Length: 143
Image (cartoon, rainbow, N blue to C red; front, top):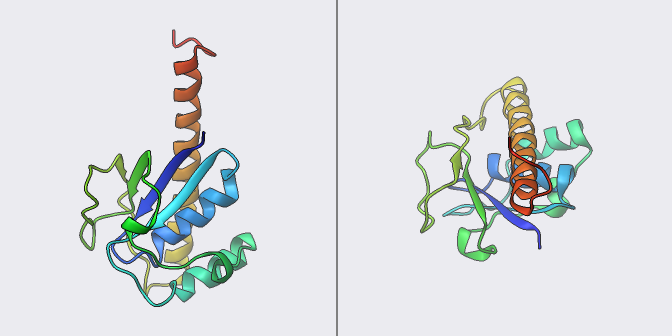
């Protein structure tokens, strides 16, 4: 069974949506990725949609929508995208806080910087989870 990883923001309209999309794009065959918020927006951040299409060829308009935490599967790992606008309460502790600034209303360069940091963080997270899995099954030795 694949581990469920959820990316959480207040509005589920920008950083968490980018993370869900990139997670699915990079390694959706090994993990289930979700995003959610404690509130919703009528649509995903249009700069995020445009830049994800430009950078990765992914059309978030076709796959993503804003949803609240109670509408996703219970995650094994919950990641806060950053508390610069206040951490949402989800009924459990976060496993990590990536502390990413909200690029909404900022330049494309600021957006790309956040997107690339999300991509890097996902790769580190997934690599760490693979090592934990291999250690727990005895496939590798931690000496």
